[in-house]
Image (cartoon, rainbow, N blue to C red; front, side, top):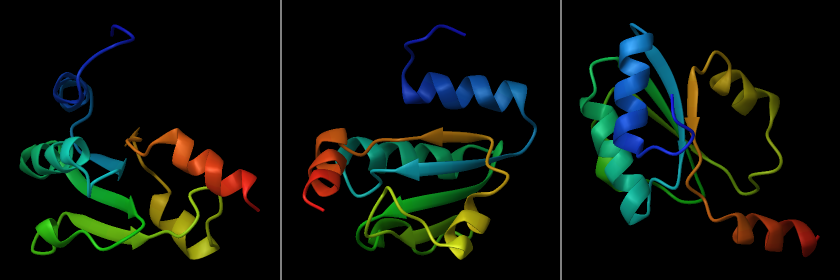
Length: 107
C-alpha cells in the first residue's frame, strides 16, 4: 500500500483486506470529512463508524452504522469513550492539527 492515497483508495484497500471493519473518523462536519463519512456509510465493508466531533453531525443522524461522540478535547477521552473506540480497524483523522495544538498550548 503506498504511503499517500486518497480516502476513497484507502477505504477501497481496507474493504479488500477486511471483511467487516470498524472505522474511527474525525472532521465529519467539514467538507472533506463529510464526504469521507458519506462514502464510508455506503461502503459495505464498513460495519460501524465512530465519529469524533466537537459538535453534532446532523447529516448522518439517520444511519444505524454511525455513532457520534461529542469530544471537547481530542487529547483526553473518558473510559466510556475509549471503550467505544476499542476494536477499531482504521482511523481517518481529518481534524486540523493546529487547532488541537492551540487547545493544548492554551491549557
